[in-house]
Image (cartoon, one colour):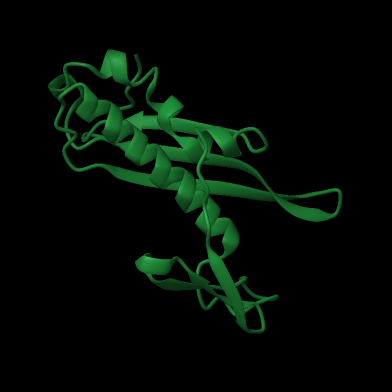
Length: 146
């Protein structure tokens, strides 16, 4: 089974692009200073957001598949950029997913946590070139380990 993804873009000025998601509307992206003016999220920030969004959705899917109420889910992603062969590259992404309840309130974390990342199309694709780490915390900020 294959499917396609289509997004249109057009240059507005300097490094500002309008990104057209069709029925979902448009957003503006821009490079940060000194190249751009930082008038919108950078492509690097959008990549990081895509990874965190997909990981969150995958965790949500896996929890709901086990008939769990995930509670309020939060995510944070931090990326590192470094010069590699004289060019800036994203060299790592670290995602923290924070569950909406204490770990003890979930019945199936031991089933969900080892497999939920497999559902994430974006992260599984990106991590072939960029190391991605994932940290799971419960609502109390305690690290969840299975």
